[in-house]
Image 1 (cartoon, rainbow, N blue to C red):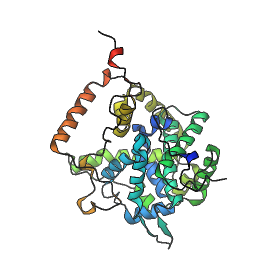
Image 2 (cartoon, rainbow, N blue to C red):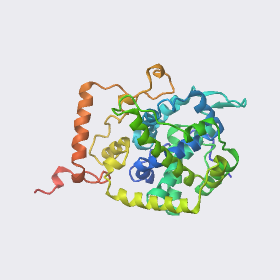
Image 3 (cartoon, rainbow, N blue to C red):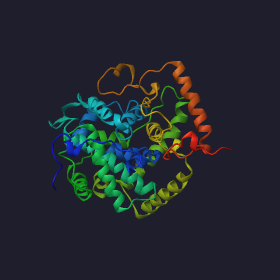
Image 4 (tube, rainbow, N blue to C red):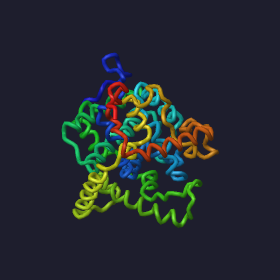
Length: 354
């Protein structure tokens, strides 16, 4: 397999952000990607260098909901931030500069190793592919090729070496199969995802026992989905059982989810960073409108704030929070009357008079 050029983007390979006509915009911010949360977390951690970094530096088990929720905002931004996407990519690189060390087997690792960094990106690309295939009605081969090309364009936003990036969708499938068969391992970081308990956040007003009864079945269900979505070599390494009956049930679940989501408005179906991007692209919000950031209550624990590896949501005044709550309330109340986010806003002069 021939790898892509090992250099920063040249004038012929400029880092051009993805836009609203891309399939990546359609799928990456979709709420249904959350159904594969255990899958993407565990398969990322199976890469030895990435798993070692998580074991040594992550606080995921301490506050999994907050950690995932706040991290998703900049990750989404590399797709949805338009002319600011490359800046968001640099921000994410900055979070990883101090994640380095030596694992239990004496192997050195660094999160900005091009092979390690690209593996994480490859799992997000495959998250789109698998979510669309299982829960969004499926993809054609042409769409998979398009998504592959878009994932390369998306990766350029980080300004990383392009050396590990396969040249084509066919080459990527060889790359993915080789990683699954030969390089991935079941390490402690992976086992932690499989056995994760979701601690009740401080801001949730319900008894801990009730919380546990709600979330344990959800985590168990995600682990079952992960078993079905794993490639066979990975499932075998993880010692997971999967029967033909399980496969039929997963496919039926996928069809049910796909049908149900036809009635879900974009404002609910998409991540807030994606909703804001569609509004800017359609003219419903200024092109330079402030980027949507994670809520302040998703901030890292006090003893971890200020560390370069953590995204810190901006602190907002009480007035800003109240305004956001009012805006969200009216947006949700008017969902049935809103036009599609993906249709351009008509100029006032062209609107029909009632």
